Figure (cartoon, rainbow, N blue to C red):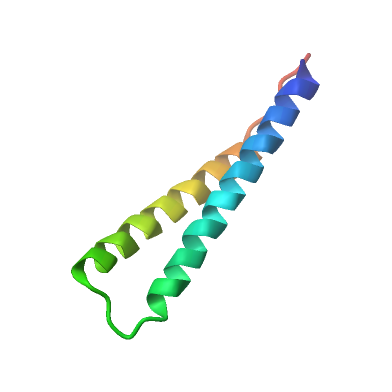
Length: 69
């Protein structure tokens, strides 16, 4: 049971890392532009929030106590 929980936690961490990287990459693309449209500015704000939320979830997942079998 503990192994299954740890495996699930590892898969979730990988998913969150991939999401975080995807958000960071898109933010870099936006920041490379000399001018952002109103839609791109809104996307930038949304991506920053999503990126921070993913980081918060990774931190919480990393600090969670493993289940005792």
